[in-house]
Amino acid sequence: MDHLPVADRSADLVIAHGIWNLARSGAEFRQAVREAARAAAHHAALFVFTFSRTTLPADAQPVEGESFVFTQFSGEPQCFLTEQRLVSELEEAGFVRDAAVPVRELNRPRPGALAASRVPVIYEGLFRRRE
Image 1 (cartoon, rainbow, N blue to C red):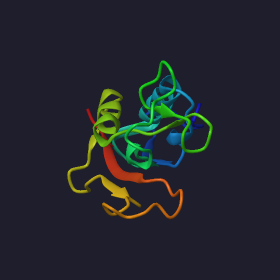
Image 2 (image 1 turned 135 degrees about the horizontal axis):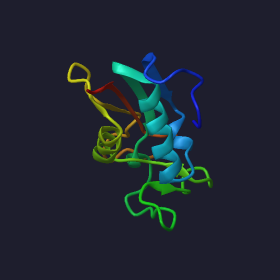
Image 3 (image 1 turned 45 degrees about the vertical axis):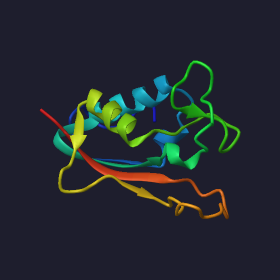
């Protein structure tokens, strides 16, 4: 999450598969997103697979001083973003949604279904480095 061992603007594809949700603060999350932006070439693809806020109960409270870092899932600080927040954080770093591939939410329980396991709800999406 800290440093990708590639030159600036050299990667045609950056994969963030289940790594950004492990950030322990919003600052650490944003640094990881900035690092992806540093490595991404012009119009590079960014594949994102990360925890959705939907994983947690609606009344779950974030860690003090944070807006999307929670401990309720594993007992450790982890990032759980809404789709809107995920998109805005990525846009701020220079990524935009790839219009050909919608952001999907996976593992979302059906309304009224009992929670059978602690499987996280996941966002999966494709973004592009703009410029």
